[in-house]
Amino acid sequence: MKPAEEHILRQLEPYQSIMLYVRSVIMKTLDVEEKYSYKLPFYYYNKKSFVFLNVLKGTDYVDVVFMDGALLETEFPELQDANNRKRVRSIQVKNLEDLDELRFVELLKSASKIKLKAKKK
Image 1 (tube, rainbow, N blue to C red):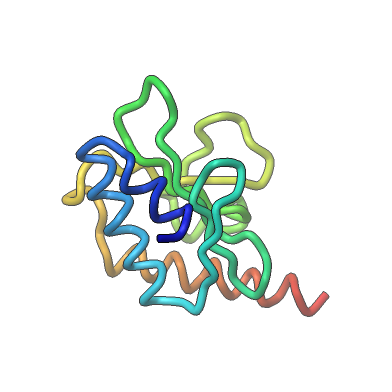
Image 2: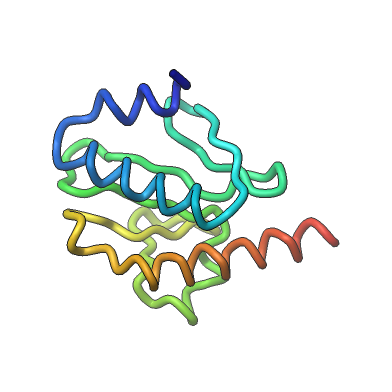
């Protein structure tokens, strides 16, 4: 078993189920590479860090963090800047019903286009 998957399976419920679901949507939507970096499951698109999953201490949600999320805020106002981060934005998922899969897939695809543009520069 991969370290990223092991990390997810060590999470308590409902975080484990949320992370497994989000992971499955990411992996079926895009050709990503799953890695375990900074003790978190990271997903790389075109060899660049793309999105990662985290449960911050003292919170009751899974933070689905987009590395270039600041560039997507206008199109996806559900992205939040929880910790005054420069580039990073996230969606916070408290339960599976909170995540609109179709909207999440749109977000993933838009974020992947940004990564492709960045790679061409």
